[in-house]
Length: 277
Length: 344
Image (cartoon, rainbow over all chains, first blue to last red; front, top):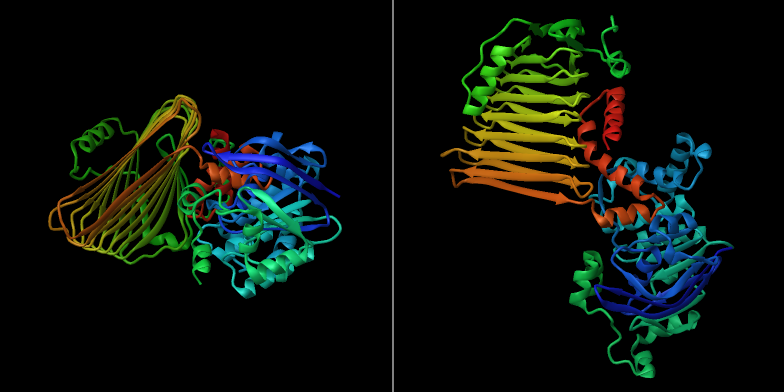
C-alpha cells in the first residue's frame, strides 16, 4: 500500500507564490477530495506533485513511500506509481493513442517482459468499451481534435491501462455531461480497492455523487484550510464557501486572479461554459 | 528478380513491391508491372526540356542536359486510372548519377508514383524531373531520398498542371548529403490543384535547402505548401516556400505551413515563407512554427512514464506520420521508420 505525504509545500510560478504551505497525507485505499473556488491553487498542487516544468517548489517536501518525489523527474514519478489525469492534456499530432499507451506501459517493464501486441490490444479494446469510447480511438492522434469529454475519458483510459498506485484527477468532471460523468465515475470507482489512493480535485460536489470520497479538504489562498468528511462536502453543497471564509476571516480566497490564471494556466472553454450556466 | 546489385538494406521491401521499375547506374535493370499497367509506356530515350520559368531552373536544366547519364520517360494514356502504385527505384552505387525523368499523364488519367533514390559510397546524385499533368489528370507523387554518402544531392522538378488536374506531392528527405531540393509547380489551367509536402531531417554538419514554388497562372487554382523538418547537431535546414498568384488569377488559393524542431544549441533552421500576390480576389496565408519540442507535450508524455528520449522520439516520429500514411507498402514504412531513427 502506497503513502503520499505532502509537508509544508510552497511553490511558485514566475516568481509568484501559489502554494503557501500545503499538508496532506494520502494512503492507498483512501479517496480524498480537494474542493475550493477557482484560483485557490488546487490544480497547481496537482501539477507540482507530477513535476510540471513551469512550477518551482521553494519549500517543503513530497514523499512517496519515503522516497523524495521532488528529486525525481516527471517520468520517474510516473514509474514510481503516480498518475495525474490532466485538466487540459496536450495534443500530440502524429502520435497515435495506442502507440503512446503501449510505449508508456512498456516503459514500466523490463526488456525481457515487454508486453505482447495481442495482450495489449485485448486490454486496450476492453478499456475502450468500458469507457464507451469510439472504436477508431487507437488510430487517432493523441488528443488531437478530441472534444473536451473525449480528452477526459482518454485520461481515464490511460489510468486504467497504467494502473497507478496514487492517482490525481484534476477536474475530471469539467466538460463532461451527466452520462459521460456517470461512465467516468463507474470506471474510476471500479479501480478503487485496498490499494489505489485517489485524490479528486473539483469545484463541484457533483463529481462526488459518482465517486465516493471519505476525506474532503477545502483549499483557499494556497493552503488546505479545512478538512473533514462527507458532512463538510454536504455543507459546501448547501451553503457554498462564504461561511468558511467568514469563519477564517478570509476576504479574497484566491491566489490567482482570473486574468493571471488565464495567462499562466491557459483556459478551458468547456469549463468556462459550464460556469456560465 | 536478380538482386545481386541491389543493396541489402533495400532488398526486404523491393522484393515485396508489385509494380516496380529499377534503374541502376543508368540502366533499367528490372521492371515488373501488373496487367493494369499496360496503359503506361516507359523507355529510356531522351526527350527535350520544356521552356523554364526561371533562370535558375534554366541553368539546372542545361547542366542536367550536358551531364545526363540516365533517363526515364513514362507516359500514361488518356483516361487510364491506375489504382496500384508504381515504384521507381534509382540506385547509384559508385558512379555519379545525373538523371532525367519525364512523366506525362494524359487527360483524365490517374497514377501514384513512389520514387526511391538510393546512393551509396561517394556517388553524387542529380535529378531533374519534367512532369506534365494534362486536363483532369491526377498524380500522387511521393519521393524518398536515401543517400548514405555525405556527397551532394540535387533535385529539381518542374510540374505543369493543366485545367482541373490535381497534384499531390510528398517528399521525404533522409539523405546524409548536402541536399538541395527545388519543386516548381505551374498551375496552368483553371481549377488546377497542387499540394506539396516535404519533410527534411538534417544532422551532423549537413546543409539541406528545401524550396517549393507554386505559381498560379489560372483562375481558381489552388496551391498548398507544407514543410516539416528537424535539424540536429551542427546542421542547417532551410525552408523556402513561395506562393505566387499572377494578375487576374481570381479566386485562387495560396497557402503554406512550416513546422520545424531544432535539437541542440548548434543546429539552425530557417523558414522563409513568401506570398507574392498580384490580384485582390484570392485567399492566401502562411505560417511558420520553428523551435524546440513543445515543453507541454514532453511533460504530458513523461507524466505517463516515458523517459525524455522516448518522449522526444515519439513526438519526432509523429512528424513522419502524414507521410507514411501515404504509402501502402508496410515494409517500406518500416524502412522509413528505421531511417528516421538512424538519423536522430
